[in-house]
Image 1 (cartoon, rainbow, N blue to C red):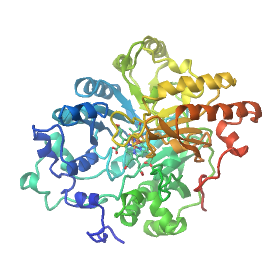
Image 2 (image 1 turned 30 degrees about the horizontal axis):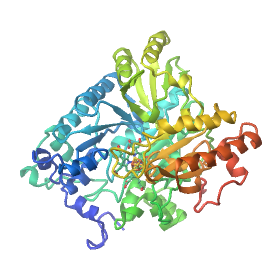
Image 3 (image 1 turned 45 degrees about the vertical axis):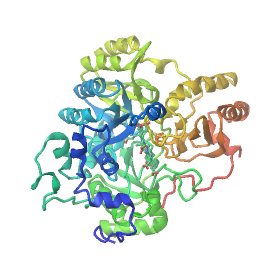
Image 4 (image 1 turned 90 degrees about the vertical axis):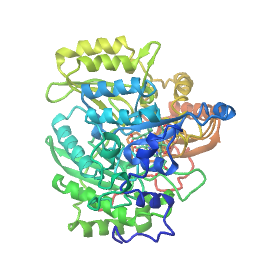
Length: 576
Ligand code: SRM
Ligand code: SF4
């Protein structure tokens, strides 16, 4: 099927019709923003707004009270930036800090895809917030929506030459796959109006890669540099494993069809790890990535959005058939994948020196939330650092932050600011706290079934007490919390994961490995905290008593056969 050979109008999902009628993502967003009567925009425009990097939300904590008072919900907007590889200059940092304090809720949120989200922006301030980001040379175009999203990459600062090369390819990929519509400039930047005003897109406008209906669903690319899989490369639609020899980038192993999202009680939806199908050289990368996107554009399911991600396209076609069609479209056969090894998928905290003698400080930021609270003035502290720092900032896919490229003689000044503002928690924390991720969930996420980010600070001390009791406080254990099964914290890759079912109730999933190569599985479904802690207490006791030397918790649970059999494939598949 070609991009123009789409399913019949009767069978496509509503979203396909909205995209198709949107005149390349314009809809009536501009008019909706100008309407002073409501703090909201229309439902269709809200769906299109995602492609521009924003979601309409409402504060769920206030919903009931406002309903009682017969007020419309407390509408507000989330804005997500596209920051390829998570790299920001200090002046860009200061711009985000300013926007957060002026028009958002006074906090910045580092996401699990290495970028910033800002919450709580009112409709009247949306345009100037997005314009201010663009003034700092950061776009929000394609941060959400049925397109290629923010391209994520390893941040491991030790192998600097190779990492620079990888980062350069990440930036090229991000730019190459960006939508071409001029709607973004028109709406947010007062750019050139199209002929005929806002009612029409010019006859010459086109989306050469995406076409008028873009992709069937979101699409995600991540690049990992072994031995650290901090980008969780097998959770990506297109995962690229950089192959480096003698500090030179030889190319990338290609993994396709990773994805986390699932729906409770619907076994036709499932998390899946990317399958490794071959190796490409750097000069083949853009063509390969574009062709995978095109294949998904043409073959993906446009009738049922629950089955529209690349993982389902591949499972429907069969991996071998998918690879064969990809190679036919590419015009060459993929080379066999190269050997690689991952040690872990976490971040390395503290200072590390790179091969150029520059220093990088990785800080732990709980749930990626940068706010000013008593004893922990994280937002102010990072503003103070941005004012003196001459290197970069790098956000990580574990919601953490690296103060990167610091000359040796600047370290003391950075350390002093880190300590002064309570950013030095990484020095003292337990093994599980250092490896914990939580998605946003309540009060902003419309899909949340249970708390996540706000629950993590309550849950961690209780888990730490159990671990301490069993002599395991320093043990590194991957903990991932999600407020629903969509999987924004990549919970299916947690050695321990809680996936929200209802307020205070979660599925307890266990048994992923420590490097993002094996999915976990549910031990108990829909249980409360007391039951979660009781299950874990018993398993920690056995782990402490029966583990092999240096064995990780997830590996121990699998080796000891303490988990139910998996319902789907849980290991990374590799085909020649
Ligand atoms: Fe996500 C939807 C937050 C990473 C899978 N995600 C959402 C929305 C926008 C809810 C919505 O649609 O109304 C959440 C907004 C919450 C809020 O109030 O801010 C949301 N997702 C996030 C973030 C902010 C979580 C975080 O705590 O950091 C992450 C932003 C990433 C970014 O910067 O681009 C985020 N989301 C992920 C990831 C992890 C990843 O990409 O590495 C996943 C799993 C990987 C994947 O895509 O398979 C993920 N989010 C989803 C899904 C399920 C998609 C699916 O295939 O089923 C949804 C729901 C949907 O798309 O319908 C979703
Ligand atoms: Fe919201 Fe669910 Fe994603 Fe958490 S996992 S941010 S609750 S969509």
